[in-house]
Length: 244
Image (cartoon, rainbow, N blue to C red):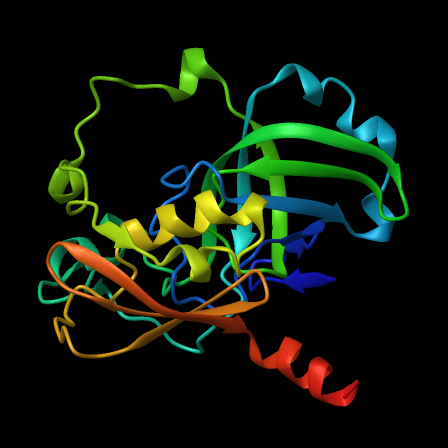
């Protein structure tokens, strides 16, 4: 797929990334916050060329540029309200990582776990530390260069401090067994980040997080995330019903 810009630039989707997130709610606010979250980058047919990945296995981390495909708008606003500031203060859009931008392009740093060669989808990149919706179109991939990309003395502006305190996650062992073993750690870490919008503080409200084909319902307060149920997501439930 090609997107033609007003100045003649052609932007091509080269791949799609598939993760455990079916919707935006619950996705970590930045890449790398939950190291156990994995994704598979599957190249589109015209870019399934093994030579294009030559040398990539020598890098531990990658920059992934992607399309905020669910944030497309015909217009744009010069200011946004970042979650970091509780959703109550506005800053300039170019002083934020909001998806609502003149060009809805995202940038994430992920760890390259491995390259799966010769799959039915060609060579696939398995990455971790993801913060993207499943099916997100990928625009480009570049290697992370520690000598150039790491700036320990960089100033972080209003995002200088680590965002919020992690919550303690309470989940009954029986509910935990409903979650595949290889997904438990990442899910608990996502919940510990407190996925609620920062402007919502209703401790009685029940939230639903769709993750890895499951719907996890929980309540939250200033200290704890308490899981109250784990069940199949809507699509899985429909499949079960169809086979009854």
